[in-house]
Length: 182
Ligand SMILES: [Zn+2]
Image (cartoon, rainbow, N blue to C red):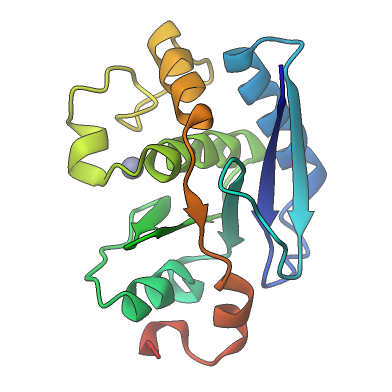
């Protein structure tokens, strides 16, 4: 089983996000889908990293106000409605995902990261993922603490897909009001 690497982008250098707990939850969740021998690596990234199209980058931001996906969508001249718990912006060639972490438990955050991973790696927008023919509660954002067999199938399929990750989140977080656009 090759390594699957997840970068948790942390452009705001969150103090209280409980990264160790989030990392542990994510590893457990992806191993539940990929098998316990799967080599799942989760890394916190406070500065810009090189991320491969076979890997996943999800920015953890405090709330919608600090959205970086909004900035990415603006550079792509795309309308973007932010999700309640997380958002994935699908551009021409790049994909940018974020999760709003304020007042969420590490296990909630891990599940939302996994949901955004489906949007990200499969390049599926809200309509196509949430109500499309993808079965499973993770796709519909209605999952409980455990993944269903359909969830695991979808997650396995997703992480084999390549998608080019948007690396502008760290810069976007630096540059003024995120909702102003460029
Ligand atoms: Zn979604």
